[in-house]
Amino acid sequence: MPQLFEFIEKAGLTFGRWLKQAPYTPHCGVVAKIPQAFRLAQLSLAEQYAAVELFRGTMVRHSVITYRDDSPGGAQPISFAGDDWLGYVPLRTPDTICVQERLPPGAAAVLINPTHAYRDLVMPIDSTEKGLFDAIDGNRSIGGIVERTWPSSQAKPQLDMARAFFENLWYYDQVVFDASRCRANRL
Image (cartoon, rainbow, N blue to C red; front, side, top):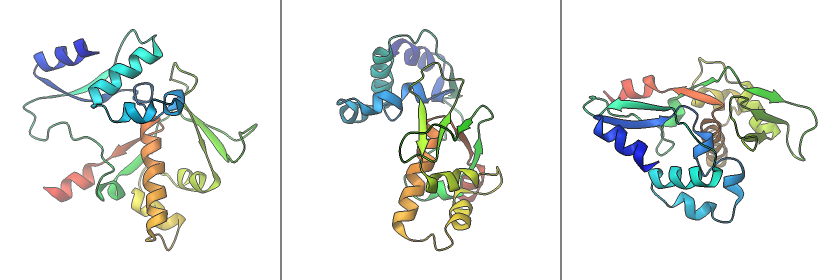
């Protein structure tokens, strides 16, 4: 992993994200459940990726999205800090499968991205989260989805739950976000 980041830097590029990020993050799958998960999350992103690569043991190739390091907009990462995330428009990945049979207790569905090589990368969702997931239409922002799903959505617990849910969808490669509206508003 350090060699990949060195290669990107020497090429005059900046790391943006993994094409499929769930296998690399300590927030997904079995890695999120190990006793060391909290400590992994305290590492820098590059160190997290290296640790998870070692944990998984079978990653032999990597696909990344990079940006020129002199790009005026920079890497423009998706972030759930602040309130910009409410303006993101989620788009479901076309490969997502929503299983609704033979579910674990408490789950209304399980989301699977069959392009993942690691079978632990499944995302159980409850009935509230399923309502949010079903409301994704590729046009409405997260804020609009929350308002549509929960008419009195300004309650902080609901927004915190929505933030965590959409961030998990992002980590598990179940959605991508159109954040151009948020960035256009900042220019």
